[in-house]
Image 1 (cartoon, rainbow, N blue to C red):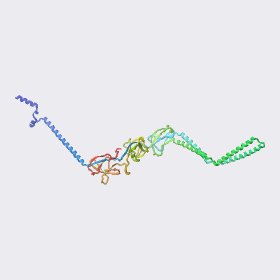
Image 2: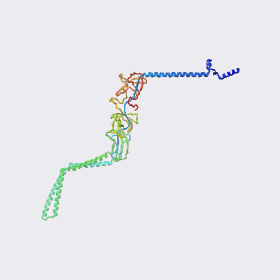
Image 3: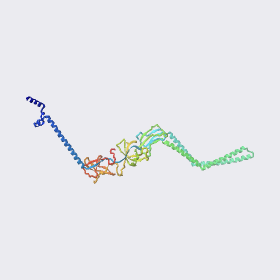
Image 4: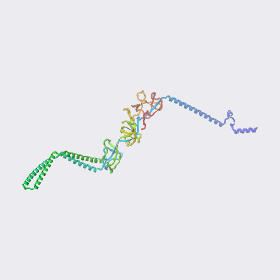
Length: 477
């Protein structure tokens, strides 16, 4: 019996204090240390769970309360003020920048380039300045010879038109009297020889000789009479006409020779141009041979870069919006942050059949030295301002943003939480918009409350930002 009790005691010692039921030990306040720690962990977890539930309930309640509070605020639209002029883009096309005046200098005479006065590319040359000189020895001699031929032809014509001199007329009269006297002497001698021949005192040979001398005297008399008559009447009209034609021919030869001689010196153009040109290309040097008659030869290319244009091709379907004088913006690909103002100047009066487009020229109003010929550019054709008093450089806001019933122009600006009144200075009215001179800064959110009244400092709820109010704007040109 004792043995069994000792064995039971050993078993109880081996099994430890947890061998009794927990309820018994709790009643006897005999809880093992390991069980105490396990029970405390579950308690902490329960506490954290209740805290999480309470936090979720609090956040949900706050969200519901915030939603209910925000739903009671007035809901308005906003318009973001950019501070830049608003304009409507009708066409957005690609084109090229070109000078309005571009001149290719070509020779009119062939020869050797004797002198080059043209500066290097990129430098300026004045209008009418001497550019090149061609060797002119042959052309100068041809001109001098033609001048001499013209002088001879004019002298001959003058002689015929003035007629014979008084001395020439007196000489013709004297020659005529002499011829008459010779005829009388020859007639007397012929009469004497005939009488002698009839008496047999003279031979037939002497008679024939006297007869021949009489005939020659009579011929000389006729010749002198004709000269005398010509000196009195002057030359015939046919001779004067022929002399005049010879003068015209000589003058044409002189002008042709002078033309070639003058064009041995090559100048920059002057008519219809500015005061100076920029040298774009220089293609010949001193000593080079040029040919003017056989092939096209370009000596250099000049351009007036103070007057620039943009060339675009407008499709047939877009010709309805194209108007002469409409404003434009030119944005070179090389300088995408620069905007050059311009206007439609002219259009080619014919449609390209293959491309179905019309070539249009845009005058650039404010060119500078950075615009170079043949640059790629983006050309925006804008809708013209309908009001003549409107300033195209002022930004605009919708007219419905103005607060009604106030003395000075006022708008509501959203400060992030509430509407704030702000006075502004207006410009012209352009359709459903008004121009703003002062009072707003780029980035200001202008409220568009519509018919609902707002108060200064009143909290508002934003419905959504206006993305342009049906007008296209470029805020980062």
